[in-house]
Image (cartoon, rainbow, N blue to C red; front, top):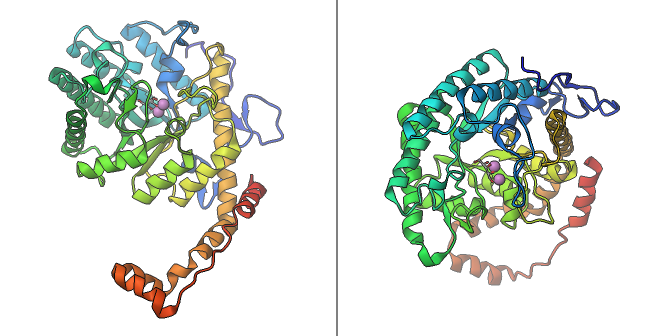
Length: 433
Ligand code: XLS
Ligand code: NI
Ligand code: NI
């Protein structure tokens, strides 16, 4: 045991009436909802990078956190892993996620970085064997080091493409070895700063071939997890190629990957793309590519991906309703890709940020499940589309445009608009929040 979280107890469910800060007020892992334990619905994951690798910098100032594991040695990387698993134990989270750069020191050469990764993967494997927390997903950091500044798979330099291939291969091997449930690709630098120096067509094609190679390799090594793309419109690139769910779907279709790859949807990224979180989830589900969630919000004033813990259960309830409508997660989960603010220096801040996020999601899920059980919302939706159950309606879709047009004269159609009942449905929602 390290002494980083000393005096912080394991967090238990005490119910909404408890005034104990170090307790869950809404998240009861064993509570049954729609025939499933809450823990299995939510599948919470903690993110290694924000809690253990981020130094607390912003564009105007550097490091604010002083953590005993900061530094680029294997010994410190192991201390970091020890503390990380202590946090996972305190929270009781079933999963965690990491990038290579979060868990191992960068080496002077690729071979050295790879050796460091292999060594820490063995260490993490031992941790997983003796703790509850398992790997939701692994990923490669191909955005921080200066070699990636002009892209990874979309870099104008083919040597960087090769380096990206070696990096992703190493990370897929690591994720496979640790029995990860998914492998994520977020293309922060897969985009451009200015079209003046960019061959957009070539870059997209290279990204498409790269993703095909990732899928080929997944099958070759027998990795059973899902490959997930995490859409984001911009930041750090001015324009990112995997802008949003709809853009990613078009890209997958172009490269024949729509049955192979799903999406990891981040709340803050959805907002940056000008969508709601629930829109992105609902669309991914409609397209058959819903995979997993990064549950972190932006500050709505700043227009940046500020990666804050969720604290508005009413807002998240609508998102969880879409997840329930999609049938819930299969390999995916609710990953807190979220960080405490740079003034939140205390170990307790790290723990309580997660407790608040978990409670927010639990409360949202309970509202969503209650609304689903009530059935009025789905009944209203079914009623609105009931006309499409008629045989003559089905014939409109199976026939031609002229046949559909002819119905108007044959039946002397003059359709009358009906209310969309939005406010009544909003009122219905509010009864469950
Ligand atoms: C950045 C992304 C990143 C991915 C993993 O905005 O959210 O953290 O989740 O590379
Ligand atoms: Ni993310
Ligand atoms: Ni993000």
